[in-house]
Length: 459
Ligand SMILES: [Zn+2]
Image 1 (cartoon, rainbow, N blue to C red):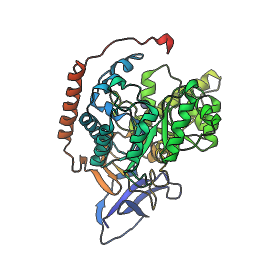
Image 2: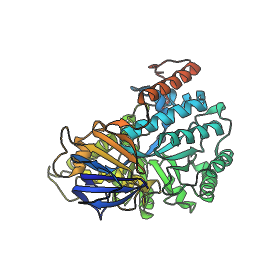
Image 3: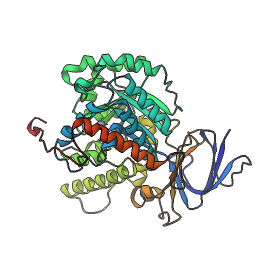
């Protein structure tokens, strides 16, 4: 079995038993981490000098829509609901090849930025071949992916050849037959539930029961208050359902989620960009024992990396903590519980909580013996790793430019700042050719933004 031995690294394991280590080694055997500690030796291993490197677990992007990777930069200055007039309707013009180009190039870019695990909330499946193209793109990329098959199909319109909700069950079952969903498998399958509304509770129940019958995890766009309460009233709340966004969750939603040891995934940058969304659910959820995970959501305007998400969440929460303290008349001084988070909490959100949110927390998201060898090497050889807590470096002082190497399941996907086995120039061409094909079908061109205003009064 292939072995790799990293020597003399600084390690932030995000594992309670292993902790942080200075000048230590990691032995990888096959796809797993075998040993961690100083002075490791193995005559069969490829030895890599990691002096000056900070090794952390690979990061998890737990909510994104990778098909939108084609439109990098489109709608950059969209305001209000202009995103919805400019981006989701594009999906109607995709071929299966365009889906392949978007997913593949998005997965590669994510890995380059230190993402080893990704959840793709896939809202661009018109026919079975679109799902097959997605599976192929993930396999070709080498990333650890959960393919979230959307049951809602709300933006596909007449181009959808399958139909929504139950009409999609047979294709999901077909895929499930080829995707075993093992904890250590690089590709896993999930379903994304249709919107949950007071008059669609029966549909929600059918979809959840279906997902459980075929044993796949679930997620949904948790955009209204009381949805978690509604799932609970149906007796179906479980940690296999991951709420995404959750900006408008009630305290009771979050209490219920915390009581089962649940997670939520926050797309902090996308939500802050969109505006008019409450962000209090992060602190309220955290105080109820909900584990927070992170996602990028909309690759058309968000860099496919989790490092920016960490920084924005950390700074935004500090900002809100400060405002709250001032409103409440507290002096500008540290009080117990304030600020809400330390950098260390935020690194956990991006790593261990990401694994947990996707149901693979026992094998992914930490550096410990038996875990999958999903690692990021942050290069401090040029400018140095910050003093003190390495989490401070990761959250505040570092950037994706320092991501030197990325390993997924024991295989290098990036090494010495170059992608392994992937010509990135070809990836750009693939992405841009697909984009131009879609734009020709739509009748638009790069950089064009429709300033159509959504009726915000009804939002
Ligand atoms: Zn989303």
